[in-house]
Image (spheres, rainbow, N blue to C red):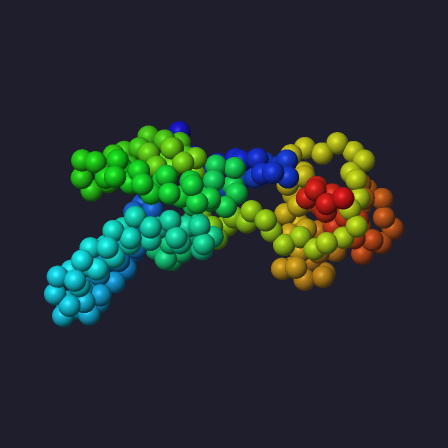
Length: 227
């Protein structure tokens, strides 16, 4: 069965779930980007039309650049999202969850030609429907995923603290929980932070709730790889 969640191992050595973007939301994002490009063509054509053949040549160059490099430019420089993807809340990342690179973005977008065959992106849509990770041919070749960005954070904002090595064995789920708590603690009230950290009182071996919070933050920094 197809699953909209995909587990990946990030460079910190933990596994996280990322929500994959399916064909429907990706088609809507493509449609938005297509309409944006059509609007640009219309405006520029009106401006350059007075220049005759020279203007027509400039329009041809602009069409080439927009069709092939519009998605590449935004995917690499705008956190994996073209305007259409950003509106729909999705983004392109590498298979390991890291930001998409220039080479990967160029490959996945050059292969749109194959995905368009025979018409209306039929090959790409069929590929997404039969692939567990909703990959079109360009994604398979480039090693990329399209995910829902609103519910996924790769780097997080973990406050810095003196790292403390963990002295007991933790499962990947437990390591992930500690890191996620550290990254999201700024979004919680102090009372809520202390309430949550008190659940780990027996393991953290600290006499006060604030001491347990500081200890947990130190463990999270160790898991993040800070030494």
